[in-house]
Amino acid sequence: MAILRTCKQVLGEAEEVYLANNLFVLPDESTKRQPFAGSGLSHNTKSVDITRTHVPFPDRWLFSASAPRLIKSISIGFSGRSIKGFPALDYSTWKTEADFDSLAPAARLQIAHERAKNFLDGDLDGYIEDLYRFFKFGGGPTLKRMNYLEFDLTNAFCPTGCCRMMEQGWSQIMFLGPRKTGFLGVRNTQEVDIIMAEVYKSLYGSYSDLHDDYEGKLNVDMDGIEKVFGIVFNPKKTH
Image 1 (cartoon, one colour):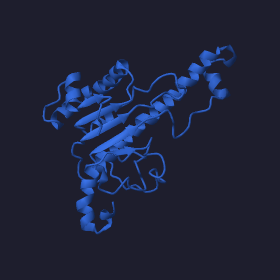
Image 2: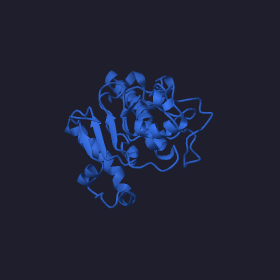
Image 3: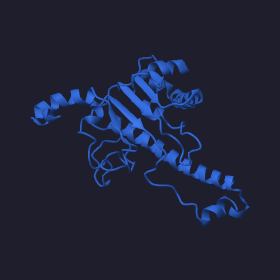
């Protein structure tokens, strides 16, 4: 890494090699956690949506100003933790939901579970959108197709640990056009089906755009989507 500090010319020539040839493993919700979150007072990333108030990595770049368009391989992990915590179930909550005393313990737990899971759903979908916007619109020129995108779902359990978090907006960041996409930590064929259903549902609606972007190679069927994005579940060899 010291070679990048030699001079601006060497930095410009060497940084592209470094960023393009390595896999960068991002921490949980890295756009909202320190040291990447910043104060939000300064926006140094570009965004086409001027009404958006939250721009990923607002006070500092993840690497350098050119990183969003040079990085070709990223790994994203998910867990049942929320950066904002979960809402307390106080008197007003139970008054709205149901009579606390009339509910069996299992029914109370189910209500708590649904509220916490919905809260985390929003967190995870927002995180995927943040990363998409950072790599799509940050760093100047339009991003070329990403080489490798990895989702690590090993720890993607719900907050109460009774189910898994598979129904997320995975396809949002897949619009970066990865040539290969790996889903790690997928437990069974049922989870595979849930993930593919979510991906297919979103990409199908954007078929015309994708058809142009990927030179007409994307067919409107599950096999076509798997082939174009190189989707593999639990690959024996990762990046």
